[in-house]
Image 1 (tube, one colour):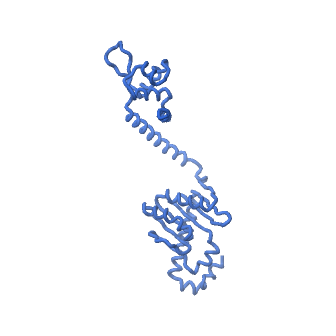
Image 2 (spheres, rainbow, N blue to C red):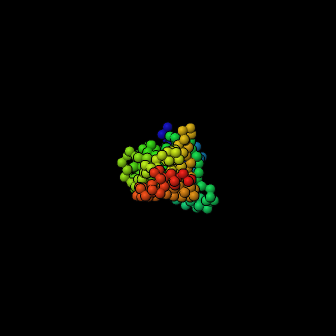
Image 3 (spheres, one colour):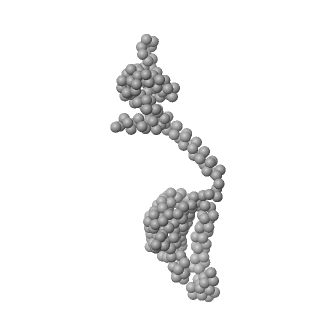
Length: 270
C-alpha cells in the first residue's frame, strides 16, 4: 500500500512508527486533537499525546490554540515541503561529515595496502575497462591492439567529448577515425610484437588506477590496481613505447643500418 511506503520512508528518515502514522493523519486533516488523531491514525490513545510531545520537541508538529483554555489541544503538522527541506539539510550535513571523516580515516591508514584484484574472462575484463573509462575525469593512457581498441572506441570517444585527455599506442593499424594523440608501432616491429605482445592491453586512468589485461585464449584475465608503483610503471611503459616508435619513424633508415632490417641486432640481445 502507498501509506505503508510513506511510513517506511519516514522511518528511514528518523521517524518512529507512531510518529509517521500521526504525521500522515495530521497532513490529511488538521488541526486535530488527540482523540481525532487516535481514531484516524490507528495509534493507541495512551500513546498519542506521548508521541505528540516528542514530535513537538522535534518540530514535526505544532500546538494550535483557539484562545479557549477549556478546549482540547489541537495540533498541526509541519508543512511537508518544510519537512522535506529539513530531511535534505540533514542528509547533506551528514554526507559532508561522512565524506570528511571517512577521507581522514582512509588517509590515515597504511597506504602500502591499496586496491588490487584480479578478474577473469574476456567480456568481463572489457566491460570493466569500459566502465573505468566511463568514470575517468582527466587523462587516459592506453596501449592495445586494434581489436580491443574497436570495442572500447565508443567509450573512449565519449570520454574525449567530455574533455578527458587521451593518448593511445596501438600495436597495429586502427580502423577508426581518432581525434586525440595516437601512435602505432612501426611496421618493422610488427613481427616481434606478435611474438612478445600479442595478448596485451594496458591502461592508466587519471593516474589513479591501472588495468593490465592479458588476453590468453584459455583464460583471459585482468589485474586492476591503484598502487602508485604499478600506475607509474605502466604509464612509463606506454610512454617509453611511444618514444621508441617515434624515433624509429623519424630515423628508420639510420637504425636499419646500425641494427639490421628488423632491428634484430638490438632486439635479440634481450
